[in-house]
Image (tube, rainbow, N blue to C red):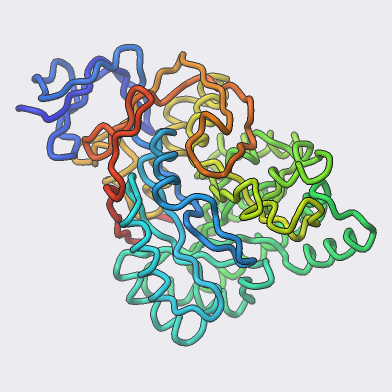
Length: 463
């Protein structure tokens, strides 16, 4: 058998374990795994490297306008270039409806933007912020076209849905086999607490974590899970940030509720102390839900080990460090006027490899599962994505486990202008990245062409 590409002499990693093998690629797919494979038209020496599936980042805000009218710094070109440099070969972004927008037009416009710029493969969650009769009527067709996940917000004034509206989405998703993903925080608690902090003159970014009470997460989780039980349809909870939130998910799963949940590197590696900076500086670390405590970090790591939480995404929300993004409302903006979100698409895999493998918290199998295989399974991309197996797309990353790299705004490739991990050194680096059999990153150079990413239509996947 002849191959277009052979990756030779490495240690292959899957969600089940590791083994020494060569990997043969033909026609953009993996067609051979074994020893002493025949010669390929091109070959990569993977000696001393882990050969792992490309990362699947299932929560990325790309070329998206926030409800407050602030555009993310990254378009599909820059976001997916940074994804590639970080070892991520598939992203699920959002087709974000705002109030008054036609949902079909929204999805069409995001497709056009992605086709212009994407360099890795991509899919979309549909954000439904205005569930009119017309929008709800459009969902079955859009789901059938491969957009089999819907996101709803339980907070934010301009886009949040009431319980009855979320029930409508769950009913449609149940009938047409789609996943419902939710940003779950109690809006009333956040609004009440924010008002009192501002009245007391506590307006700077350092007070943003206090404006999102811990109980706002647990209450919203419990309410959402009750809706899932009532409708008989599973839910996915985005960005779990607290120990109590993880416990609510665990208890629900133990009693048989079909709920899946994710967390993000910033909740595992940063804390509310990072927001406590003078002046406006803390705005760099403002996100929702906010950063929490060291004890929450420990609880979230344990929840990942137990698989109470099943996914790790970046929640890449790259608002630039200038007047177009974080500083749009000036240097004296209150925490309520600051765009919530941080960049993380490129750094996600390096941070998690370092924290899980280099620091000994978990295994290669865990790393592959949480950052590639599980998100691919959950969102209907497996077995095409998220695994090194016969028939899968040849999305492969050669990781040097001994190579150290310092994360700085200058060394990353997004357009945010800062990183919340400035100066952090990680061990473990994605040296060569292959997408569908094509080398797209090598020797520090991007080789992918603009617009070469492919849309991935999806079914609902697995709860």
